[in-house]
Length: 454
Image (tube, rainbow, N blue to C red; front, side, top):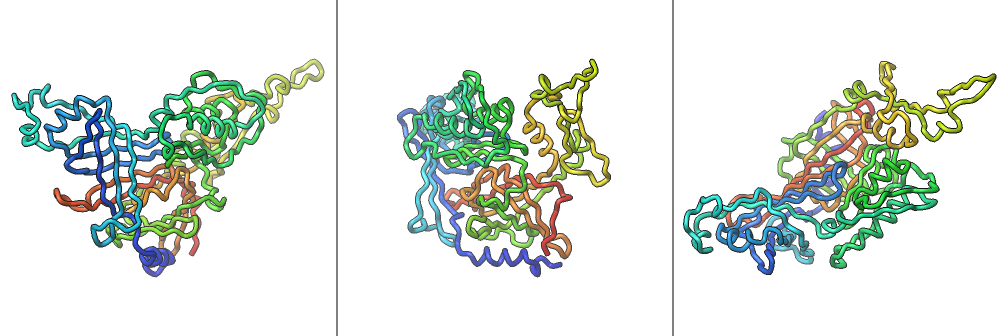
């Protein structure tokens, strides 16, 4: 079937007709070096890397052009005391004018220079010493890593204590909210709250122990692994837009749970290259067109063959009083009463591989089930051109639609990463229009779960 005759094209038409989007912008910045304020020659590019599964905060890299003398004389001496303020303004789709009513986005970060070098020490500039003369020699490209002012302090906060009669979910919410707000930052940068998907484990535990000096940013991980577990399908947590987001990383069943969702319509790369309008909002559902490169990695089959599609382990909580039954002067152990065994998804050939967990005896099935859930899916990576990263959030439920022959099929999954690259649309010293492209990384259920919808 020609994709233009499918239901996918209906969504494409609606997106194109949905009006101009705030995806074109100008970017500027100011370097604060001790008491000096320095404007670069030009912002060249900005990388916003959000790895919602393996990190807890953003990796932001900004590349800029700065005259050599200004760098040597005014920036280099204060590399341990640098801030950078990023400034973004929306501009029109067809002109370079700032959109009326658009809010200028300004945020100040702590800056750390990447790949530091000093041409004077390296003897690359001879005996030239004045700032003006050095500026005439070169305008090098410099890269800085930017750190959110809140997380810079939050990552240093230690916690610990004994907590009574509460769930792991409530302990995470209480600690992450209260302690994160102790960061000494301006009111508009204070943590605004915790957005947490309801935990699978709702057991109220008599005692929850957090050893002293556990970093606050490790608390969700600590509770999940050492205090009974949180989710049965993986754990992700991430500080994003002044909120902590905590979610089950491999749960592909949440699309209909009422949270804001993401629908991705995949179309051939060459069909609409560089299209200006690539998304629309439909209530709480964000619908986007994937117009760039798409890759799919079928990971589940190999993972299940190597590590198993099932797991078994002995329940430590039953070892003391339920491990054996004494009868006729004999101790009889019941495997059914003391072991936990589970198959995640039956294999088509019925040859299920149920392995013994690395933690052979433990009382935390949620960690074991989470490891199993990670082997039940695959990875999809798509490129969203002219993107708007602000509409995404960590752990967002995803529906991925594509054309297979005459059928439109869909996969359900979880957003685990977004990597936005902001760059000048055209090269040249007078260029001012920046556009963004975002690579989305999604965990989806194995390909055997694909549903045809028409």
